[in-house]
Length: 310
Image (cartoon, rainbow, N blue to C red):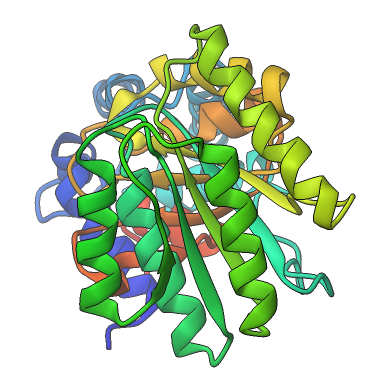
């Protein structure tokens, strides 16, 4: 299996072609030649194009320009290291804390987000990851609102040999959560992952369903759900920030999963989301395979983005 860094590097290289052309491909400004004013302008444009946002792009450019004023021999790789260092500072605290799973039995993870974010697929991949680690896991198909959701998650569960608790289309999602918790408890599973209904952050009735799931879970365990993660489509760029803010206000998010970083030109979008909410990023999606859901690493992300080696 490829290393985490390799996955980041390949995924982000596919996702940000303009950015990667500047950062480290042969002939790019970060291939070793000296910087000049034109190449710094080109870099600034690429930062905006990758959706880093004004604040982050400005910080990176300001530090590179300051270094360039001091040393006109500054080369592309020097600028890359400066940019990576700035991003590491911006993303301080963005990684999941150690032992985040905790001692709950089972630990309940609610995955939340709009339709199309990759939430159901992520549920299955996350379940497979825990299974591979030797942790008992149960999936709860609480997305009863979307007709195809049950079929989709059942297909994944069968393929990956995962225990799934599901019901019929338009069933009470909170009742499914209740049954899934009982199944996880009966199986002595360490983790229960609930795939909740995809919803627009502006739909109050669906937001109320999320709150009902929480109330039902708390009849079993007053601290549940222990994790509430928003699954964000990385290709949405800065548009995802308002979405994340609204979900956080309504449900109290505890973390993020950023998907589809292998198919977007906006590899910097997660930086803006983190700056806005200061929520840890637990995993990122870098492809379609089950192994492509990777734990988020600030070092891997910044190095891969700026064409630096691990």
